[in-house]
Image 1 (spheres, one colour):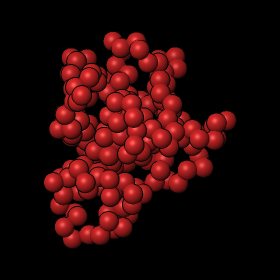
Image 2: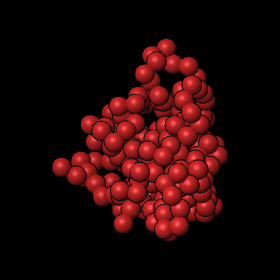
Image 3: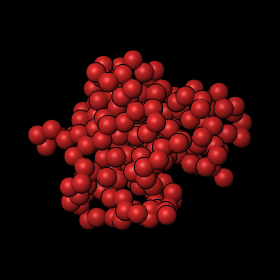
Image 4: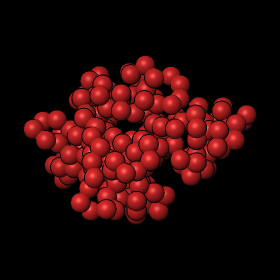
Length: 183
């Protein structure tokens, strides 16, 4: 069953906060991403994902997790959200992991929702085969914010997937995944 994103009137740093339910549309995530990019005056690739987190008051830290399969996590500590990312991952993989956790922040960590205090993700949840709806939503958000639909649509006409990966600073496998969703 698809899921749907509902707007809440509460805003964080001027950006509309959203929460995910059991029904969705990719276009709702895309609209949210455009609001975030516009609010932060980001108009071309690559999206400065750590800068964006800083603007939102989210601390990003690199770490070595005790569990080697762990890629990233987000949680709130004393009123401030923090994203931890595996320092051994490539810069491109770290960017996707940070964007994925940012997706959890906007879509699932609404202050009115108490079901989750945070998220921890591994390669299974950060991929095309993620099973849980919240992980699929966070992946869609990450793809959308790192590679906004209109940018990919216009740039793919004259650039190879390898060139696009270099422009967007993402692994080429993510370009292949994103291009499938862009018409």
